[in-house]
Length: 280
Image 1 (cartoon, rainbow, N blue to C red):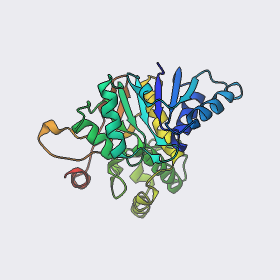
Image 2 (cartoon, rainbow, N blue to C red; image 1 turned 90 degrees about the vertical axis):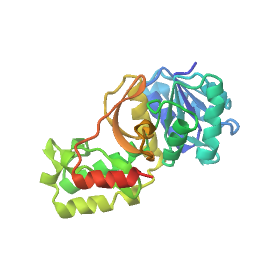
Image 3 (cartoon, rainbow, N blue to C red; image 1 turned 180 degrees about the horizontal axis):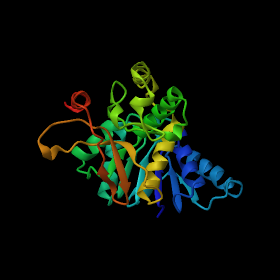
């Protein structure tokens, strides 16, 4: 049984398979897509690069989607001919997989997968810690990059979390954001922060390379290769009696999926903005 099964061999799925292999993040990766030999061809191309890239991960490709049954980690990516998995097609697929034992964890890698996460939890009764979307981390990475440009610093020095519902209802907790260890509001004045906030919506949706990088970080977190916090789409907790929709939250991942949510301190204004973004 492959350690990671990527369902969909489009640009996102193929890049994710290569990233996981190049980083030796998993012992084995299967790339599956019903479109002919596309998945097998991409897997062969990746394996032929192994001697030059210096990795040992085994990558295979095929057309049998039910290879995902019982897999430790399944990533829903994009099909070779139809783009990222639509909610209408992905929900029945997850339902069929669950009848066969289902995957242990499902990572929804597409930019439009927030509704898929929500329906998987509400309709299919999947644990909300075991199915989540990684596109918000791709957006957060882009925001870190432009924040670094505004502050004339390196992107690796920027630490921030994004909350809410992209593209138009994103909350950036400025008081918790740091650049080079300093509070962001010390290095970025009000106009700079407003310019940064205005650029968030146009950066959505992220492209396949950014989405693949975010999904790869999530897989590495689940497999214990990283303890880096990520921003993910997580389904709301209906048990609290408040009807809400899926939004982006910062989390820490582990072998069981989402180990904990790490909400930063929010100002009163940010709290109201977040509630308005997620409440139905």
